[in-house]
Length: 329
Image (cartoon, rainbow, N blue to C red; front, top):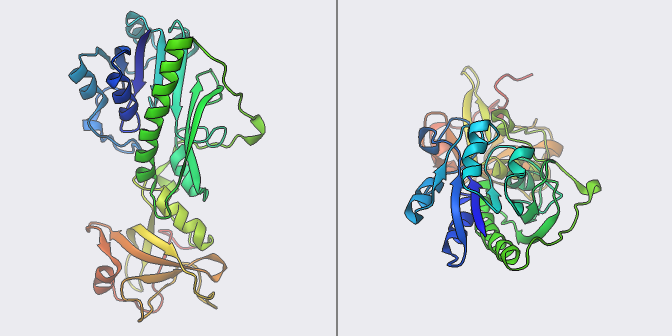
């Protein structure tokens, strides 16, 4: 069976490596995104590692990098590989009906969620953002609808209490590689097999993140804020603006925070900063419902990442100091 891999970035790399490692698998091609600024294109949510192209070149696998796989040129490059099976993981483009009609057997996709939850481009971030404690990987048959195909195999993982989207994606990528290899080997041995249809009533969406999604809303409950901070890393980063009397707002990235289990505060507006002398390694920020978020690590604009103590040495707390949007209402 002639296998063509389609994918870009670190989520796809373990799947490609697993397919290449199988001695009996006939991987005849890779389709990946064109090289763009060393994989660090501005605004990209995709992490980069060894590189799909590098893995292919090491294995002697032909590589195609069309601007769009759905153009006549892209289709021509794909058809020249004569695939029986396409294996897709974080490729980054919607596949047209013509693309899906190209492989003789069919197309499978490695999707980083427990479908039908979190269909779309950012399933890992949304799982954390929405407070999930468990997620996973689904191997599905690709159909024209977005992530709507039958589930061929699924595996779940617990989400760590402090795990960011980037850290979780790394674990899911390795898990997805094992699941994908299992499905590919079964198809090679038995042919196409029936999957489990997704329940439309359980569908939730995980659209592509935008830069402004990183802005922290301190009026939310503390747990929602902490989940948001974890979900927005490594991109678009969870950020806020530090407001100090008589000074311009300063953009600050919040890297590590927990919710406080202290009794609720009375009075301070959300975003107010305060410090407890008995806890020198952090400071507190009021959240919605008079709850509190405890900040441990952050990065002021133009500065390196630092712990709370370093931050407080450079920015002593004064009355009226707080976090919020750049322009306060």
